[in-house]
Length: 146
Image (cartoon, rainbow, N blue to C red):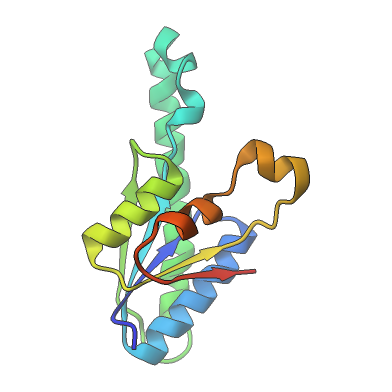
C-alpha cells in the first residue's frame, strides 16, 4: 500500500515510538523509509545577528543531534526481520512543519509518520503544534503516533 514513508524525527521518546511504527510499516509494505530531522533556525534569530558564531554553534549542535536521531532509526531498520532501506535527511531554513511537508512533497512520500508530544493547554498554545500544522497542510496521509 505505501511505497515511501517519511518519518519526522527529533530524537525524543515520542519520536522514537513513531520510528518503531514507521520501520515496522516500511518492513510490512516493502516501502522506502526517509528519516527527516527538521532544524528550526527561527528560535535563534535575533541572537545570532549580534554573534554569528553563536548561530553557527547552534546549527552545528542541531546537526549533531540530527545525526544521533538518525542513528537510532538506522539501528531500528537493522533489527528484527528484513532490513529496511533508509535514507536520512535534514531540512533547514524552514519551520519544522514546513520542512516536513516540503520534504514529503519533494521526496514523493505517500505517508508521513510523526510522534505526538501530547502538549495540552497553555504549553500547546505557546509552543504551537508541529503536528497540527503538518495535518493542516500535508497533501498525503499523516499518521500521528502517541
